[in-house]
Length: 223
Ligand code: ARG
Image (tube, rainbow, N blue to C red):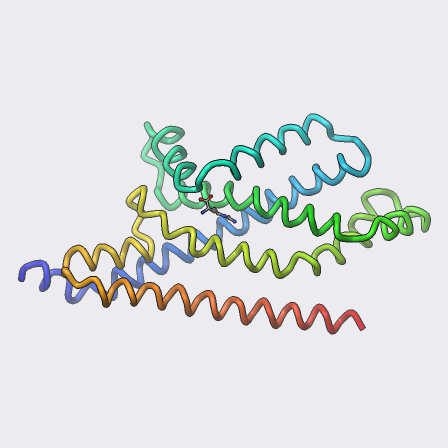
């Protein structure tokens, strides 16, 4: 009875505060992931095309292998308990770093495949028009590559949004943890868990819609 009274006025707080944390972590992690992924993709495809940046390319490869070869939960735990184990860093910050670093590896491969999807003739055409390597990349390759990777990038955002639900492993109160706290204190599993599932679902559906609209607009601008 005590817990029921205790939790009653607070249920929405757990959901809303949790949602806020989930959105905050996802937002900043996506930004880190895109910046990091972009830089890595540039290094990797520059090496592929010109043979330059050899050492950086090796470092990027190591990063990609380690990040994609281990579960994101384990990475989150290592960053929180091993790397920042002796400092009282904010959990939100740890989560942003962990998911950002994780996403960067996947985004790098998305961008790289986008760059590779542009026919090499486009690259040669740019160079023969007098553009140097950087200009060709910026004006000819990137705009086409971006259009090609948009669906995959949208998907990465959705994966990341849902993946933040493991934040509870470091006792960060995100949406999932918030719902689970309600479950554990009220002994009612149905409402809080189905509730948060619906919140995720609605967010993903709204975002999917937005990406589809952007995709259509970019496709129309082709003609
Ligand atoms: N659940 C998988 C893992 O633990 C996927 C990680 C996140 N994936 C992503 N595209 N950011 O490794």
